[in-house]
Every structure is written in structure tokens, then in C-alpha cells.
Amino acid sequence: MHSALPDVFNFPITLREVLGNTFWATLCGLIIAGFYMLAFRSGSYSLNLIKSIVMLTVITAFVMLVVGDNLAQAFSMVGILSIIRFRTSPKDAQGFMYLFFALAIGLACGKGLHLVAVVGCLLIGLVTSLMAQVLTNVKSRVYLLTLSLPGGAAARQAYHQVLDSFCQRYRLVGTKASKKAGNAKDTPDLLQLRYVVGLKDEQADDAFVDALREIESIREVSLQADEE
Image 1 (cartoon, rainbow, N blue to C red):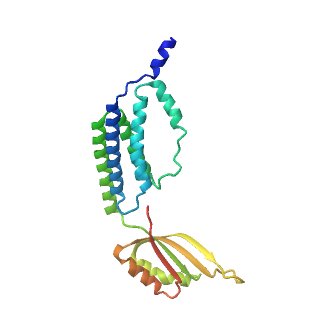
Image 2: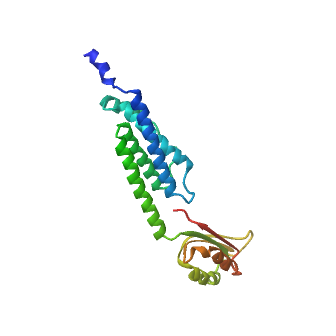
């Protein structure tokens, strides 16, 4: 009985398997990273996430090499990997999706299913890129508009005509009131309003800001693209 125990942890791994699986995992990881950069080609992608995608694909392939079909080592590996945590999380759900993408392809490479891994990379990558392109064309860009102006209904009515002229939609998302030091009145001296706006013409953002600045009651105007 005791002589059979070492056989539980015996698994044949050749150098050719290690090098082959590592090569295909690295290649697939680079392909996934390329599709990720293509989906976020506007420059909003994370360099750390790109490195994580490639490394996760290779590491997962190595884990599958070590585990193999051995049930005992599979449970041991789960216990070891459970102490690993992501110290920083991706900004949105798409980042998590690409990490799971890399994890799945790494599993395929580790099992020696190289054709499945490459075809899966290309198919899933093309689908995600196509969806990103279609959604980018359909969805208009969203901006965050910040206005600073004196309190009161009259001051608000002055800029609503500009919003109606340049924006196809706008929504108030935040209000901040401040008073001057020593002001005895309860009426706020200055209001900071934040709007989420969608412009009718995205090329007219400068003209939109200039039109708002021409209003005397507005002290400060800020327009920033809202990354979703």
C-alpha cells in the first residue's frame, strides 16, 4: 500500500511538452492582448492588464501541466492558488472578461489542445472586436459638463437654451453649493452643477464650451469625455 503512494504524484512531462505548451500559450496570450488593445484603441487600455493577460495564459498552461489528470494534485493546486489575490482590479467588466478569456485559453494550451486554443482565440477575439466596433458606431460619446454659476433660477435659465441647441440629451447628476466666508444669508453664493450630456455634433465641443462661456452668469465651464 505504501509503495503505491508515490505513484499518486507521478506524471510524465517531457521537455517537448513544456516548450510546446509554453510557446502556444505565449502566442495565444499575445493574440488576446492584441484584441484587447484593438477594442480599446482609443488609448484607454491598461498596460498592466496587457501584461497580466499574457502572463495569466502562460501560468495557467503551466498549472495544467503540473496538475495533469491527477486528482490529488488538482486539490493541492487549488489550495495553493487560493492564496493569490488580485491587488488591483480592472476598471470595468470588459477587463474581467479578457482575464477569463486568457484563463480559458491557458487551460486549453496546458492540456495540449493547441488547435482549440488558437481557433478559440481568433473566434472569440473577432466576436469581441466586432461587438466593440458596432457599439462604438451606434453609441454616441458622452461628456461630463461642469458649470459654476451664482445660485438662483434666473442664472439657470440663461444656459438652458445653449444646452437645447448643442445637446441631443442632458441630465443633471450632481449639485454642489458654496458660500463666501462671513456671508450671513442662507442663499448659496455659488453653485457647481454637473451634467451628463450627449452632443448633437461631437465636432462642435469647442463651440459648445465657447457659447457657455459667453454667458455672463457662468463663472467656469469644464467639459470632459466620460469614459464608460
